[in-house]
Image (tube, rainbow, N blue to C red):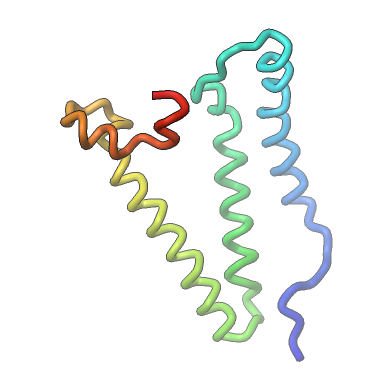
Length: 118
């Protein structure tokens, strides 16, 4: 039986997590202590580390180069499906993200958690 997961520590994942946490955790103090509203542009320093985390996770899902071809094919299909889903989501939200003028019904259909903040 071939082990599909080898339990070894990878310093790269820890470095990515540390960088992400360093950009994100300090804002908890300001959000809680001063009851401040947090805006999306505060996340800009975390974006490179988020991308690195997604790439590392995709590499783990696809598997090592010496894994069975079927396992790598299944991993590549899962990662490809995730990438396709992300592209479709971006396409769907593109009019809102770029501030295009669209009918209210279309705008409203793209809003998440409608009952809480709209």
